[in-house]
Image 1 (tube, rainbow, N blue to C red):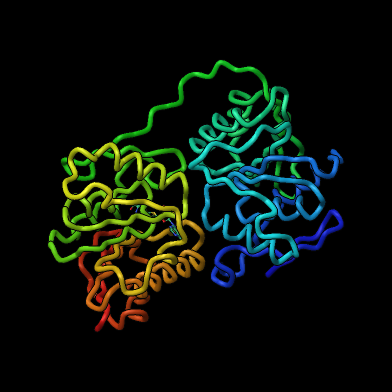
Image 2 (image 1 turned 60 degrees about the vertical axis):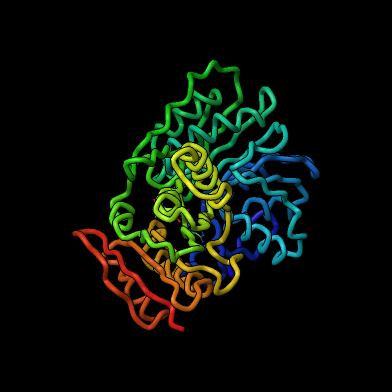
Length: 381
Ligand SMILES: C[S@@+](CC[C@H](N)C(=O)[O-])C[C@H]1O[C@@H](n2cnc3c(N)ncnc32)[C@H](O)[C@@H]1O
């Protein structure tokens, strides 16, 4: 666990899951700069403020420790778990900062909000549009990001969607922008992209959700290996994104109950909308396909699944992506029945087959192209 100092507090903060994040710090200079900004404006103790996208709860814990009453709105279920653990680690109640997932509107009405800028500009635009509803007229929104990850277009979006925005000089390679909420006639949001992963299935992407309305090359390869057998009765899509693999499984296996889990609330909302979009072409019992925000399969009963499919995350840097993938595969192993199978697709260079060997004892190479490989493993009896 690492310590964030400044503003008179010395905080113990960790990412989630603790110990599996490659020793990466749970805050950066953007958080420190935002905290300095709040301190300089000397807000009254007990003041409420809205935090948006506070990834591991660093801002929430620091501000709550200073006697303010932040409320958090975010997309990450892992971030929610980190927030509760970090509050506890610093002697605060684990629910001291209420958290609302991005599957719901931002909570309350505020005259001050802090936003960590997402890298994805479509996601920023959608966030800002939704955020307007949680700000009182004239409210201040202070946004921050690391300069190298913040294109000029991000500041332009703030001007266009929120109001006049003044940026600060860079500090420790971070920059802030202070925007005052002004009346705006916004054009309708851009439509979401639509694609067909299988001839009868139609899916829409959503801002901030993997794929952005296009079929990923790895997902396309894995789709060719989904079973069409009656035997797989309880199946799970681990890291479901827009729901593409879960819905394809539901299409191939009309008898199966299908669970799609993702740590992104936006992904779960998008997958649920895609389920509704395809309800008329899916046969079988109503309610057999379900999506949930979760830390992988952590809440699924051991030895209860026949099949797990997984296109694991790979964006967090090599070492972290590797640990994250292995952790998800270990969850799959624990939740599969003896004889149950895990199917994985991943970038060839990530060497997921070696992880399956460690967990399952062996693997099968099922397919591959220049970039991706599909590997399978069966849980022994
Ligand atoms: C590469 S995307 C795959 C999405 C979709 N299955 C597809 O093939 O298009 C990986 C997904 O895993 C999710 N994810 C990452 N860590 C997770 C965790 N611990 N629990 C659940 N989902 C997770 C990400 O939010 C992301 O949507």
